[in-house]
Image (cartoon, rainbow, N blue to C red; front, side, top):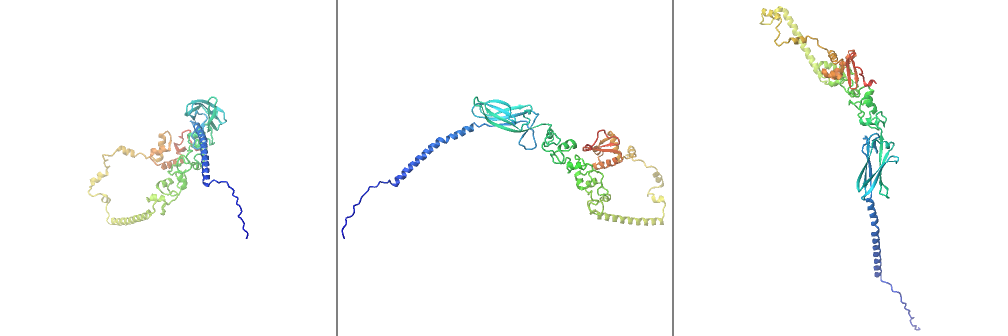
Length: 460
């Protein structure tokens, strides 16, 4: 095998590479330098907007207008109600910036026309300007009034704040809801200007005030449990809780089914008036309230309790006992009569008291002397005729010029309302007196003595 020399090797020098640790240090310095530059730039830029916001907040200005003489309404509305014909003041309040300045405050109507302006020189803080008007004719037809604040510094005039007041200007003699009651009258009657029927009783406010004399804010004026409209439709008095004066409220009579305009009615036909039954706790629509087989009128005559059925057995027992006593007494009387016939005696002997002689009998036949306390005037008065209830009413009418209110008869006589009502109804039926209703009162007059001009408001 032949021998070969090793080939010659060429050595080429390669470039030297930096180590990994040196590269990381270089990158860290670059990043730090970049972040530092960003922070410097941020510090220079960020304060500018902040300063600008602070300056803007400092110079903010607000303004508000308010009318001082408003019309109180019964509903919450997004409007200020004002009387067109009344004096009013528009008070304007605004905040002035810190620096001294001259301001102009202007008032505009709903069309944007300038009505009035005034200058105000201030230093700073809250300021008030007032505009007084004898009437609001300048704002008629406007639905709003504007107040505008101007910066009037020479050469720098600009509008800096504004406020709008929504208004409704009313005429006092107007009628917004059309209920025949003027706006001013609605206010004085505490009714709504925006509702025709404030109390929702089916009667318009104007009719209640002008025609019926009822309350437009209360559906049941007289508090008898019956709606005013229902009373009028049934020919009852909505201002009197007991139209017929029988002691039963109208609302109760309507519920029971008794006639509320007949004071002498006996609905169940038991011989007792409805008013009497209501007063004494019996049922005016049931002739036998306690269901004991005896009607209420008969129980009243017998003296038993018409509301307690247990009184009937007691009555039967009492009646049986009475019959027994009568029977025993009758037999005793018959037996006594037979005995007297067998042993007759003279009348003087039978009736002469023991111990009285004949002379005493003669004295006794004479008129006995009057006791010392006897009053001859009293005897004379007792012999005068007793006045009937009708005579007493006629005498009372004549003592008062021929007529009085029904309430005065109740007051003067001390009788109950139901008794007076029944008595007057009877006398009216026979033509002895006349009776008419005027509002809550009844006028009673002797025939032909009714005062002129008296009449019921419901006759119209």
